[in-house]
Image 1 (cartoon, rainbow, N blue to C red):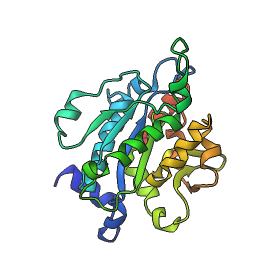
Image 2 (spheres, one colour):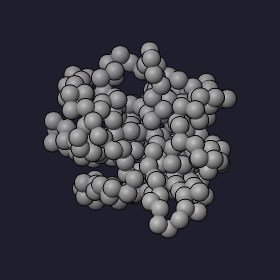
Image 3 (cartoon, rainbow, N blue to C red):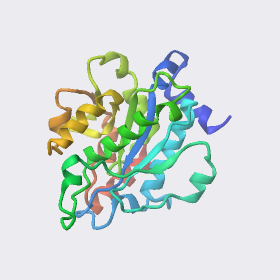
Length: 254
C-alpha cells in the first residue's frame, strides 16, 4: 500500500472526503529573519539529516497526494531562494512545487525607485498564495470543485501538514461563519499554523494596501481557534537553538 493511501486513511474516513477535497493549496512560510536563531530556520538540519524546509515539503507532498488532486505547494521565502531537495521534485512530478513572491501593495509600487521596498511578513506571503490560487483555480483545481482553503505552515514548527489538516479539518463545517481556523494553546493563537478560506483574499489585499501588516488584528474577527495537543507544545514556536533542540527531541518522542 502506498504512503499516499496510508496518509489518506489516517487523515480522513470515507465520510470526510468532501471536507478533504476543500484543500486548495499549501504555503510554507520560510522567509523570516531568524535573528535569535542565528541562521535561517528553513535551513536548520533535523536529526534525521534533513533540512527543515525539505521536511515540510515532504510532509506537504503526503497531504497533497492524499487529496487525490495534487494541490500545489508554495514556498514563500521572501526572495531568499532556498532550494528544495531535487529528489522531492523528481519523485513527485505531478505536484506543483513553486516559489512565490510576496505581494506588493499599491504603495510599494508607488515608492520612489531609489527607496528600498520593504517586503516580508506573514500576511503578504499569505496574500500572494491566495492570489495564486484564486487566479489559477481553473488550472490548479479544475476537478476539485470543493477547493476553498489554503493551508499555512510556518518554519518555526515541526508539526506535519498531514497532522495539522487532521486536526483542523473537522472545524470547516463546525465554524461556518469563520474564515480562519488555526491552532492555539492556553495562551496564544498560532495563526501561521492554520487554514484560510480563499474568499478572504480581497479583504486581506485591502488590509495590506491600507498599510497594515498585523496578523492578529486581521484575523481576530475571523478566527476559529483549535486547541492543540499537549505533546505539540514543544514542536512549535522555536526561536533559539535551544528551542529547536527541544523541538527535535519532542519530535523523536511522538
